[in-house]
Amino acid sequence: MTWWEPFLYIFGGLGVLVAIGMPVAFAFILVNLVGIVVLQGFGRPLEQLALSMHASVSSFTLAPIPLFVMMGELLWHSRVAFRALDVLEKFLGRVPGRLSVLTIGTGTIFSSLSGSTMANTAMLGSMLLPEMERRGYHRSMSIGPILASGGLAMMIPPSALAVILASLGGLSIGRILIGAMLPGLMMAVGYIGYVVLRCTLQPGLTPGYDVAPAPWGERLYALLVNLLPLAMIVFLVTGLIVMGVATPTESAALGCLGTILVVALYRSLSWDVFRRSLVGTLKITGMMMAILVGATGFSQILAFSGATRGLLAWITVLPVEPLTIIAMFMLAVLVLGMFMEQIAIMLITLPIMLPVVSALGFDPIWFGILMLINLQMALTTPPFGFLLFVMKGVAPPDVRMRDIYLSCLPFLAVDATVLAAILAFPEIVTWFETLVFS
Image 1 (cartoon, rainbow, N blue to C red):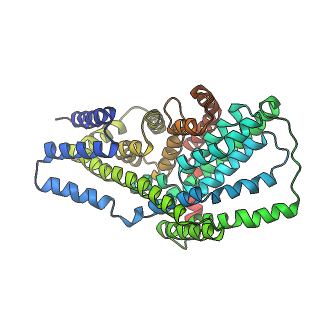
Image 2: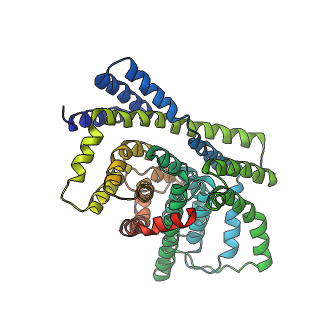
Image 3: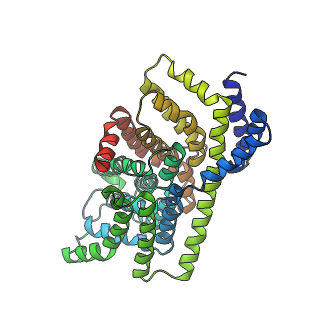
């Protein structure tokens, strides 16, 4: 049997199971069980597969996932995260597209606190979209910035998906988290630049109203009372990793503890808030871990069948430039992201792509950051980007899917520009994370 036959059987079986509606985690596990029995038989191979799947979620390096999720849930249910909005509002004066810029700034701060793209988008949409609609903002300047900045939670630490990507690829969690930070900030700056430029050229997109600048005393008070405690949470999660004081797992634990203390400091920590945050954390973490269990076995089945080795040998002798192969990988991930959930895409593609990337001589950390950018773009890519439907769920009833699709396209162009820059100049990522960890 040649390598491509088991490759087609494995991916074909997985595709059929997902297409008929089976949950992704169960689809992976079923394919794993059938594959190991067909390739290796019953007995010891099946036992080894079970042990590997158990070990995949017993790793201490996965501890940041529930801790990051818990941070976001606490800040969301307690409404403490919304205090950042008050600070930014006092510092923004007569900027073109003021509320759109405010949305992007708030979304960037929320991303550094929650780590969840869905929670980020839902918070921004439910909080800011009604006000922007009331003031007469064009929907391209209200829906677009919310979708774009909501997805930044995948790039800016603490990102649970970045931890999963690093774990699946056997990469350094700290280097992935820090390496993704600069591209995430580049995207945020690009979004703001686009909004300001377009609102300057087309003033009719946003209402022409003046906002009296807040006194400096009021600004300083808002900064100290509303933003400084939240900044301390960001420092506990990211700053301690950068300083080399704590590992990602330790910084996640400190960040979660700091979040609890900050929420309690604002007198927003009730039993109901804690219970809802805990239940939300258990649901999200359980889903992620179930998929991770299936992913480990899936990688082993591909290796046992010879599919990974055969595909690697075939790709490395293709008569094309190595960067062209990476670009093809990125296009494949983007297309998959229009139809599939992000973790499932990682599980399917990483076992195939990472060995090829290493064989071609590229930095796996750089490729991991490219993967995150691509997955973030896929969240808002029509027609089936997940965040598009999150936005539809929190938007006013008269907002059509067509409005949402059209609003996100210019911001996807900004994402594509950042992706192309990092693809062409890997030093943007490697320089920053090497500087931090040196």
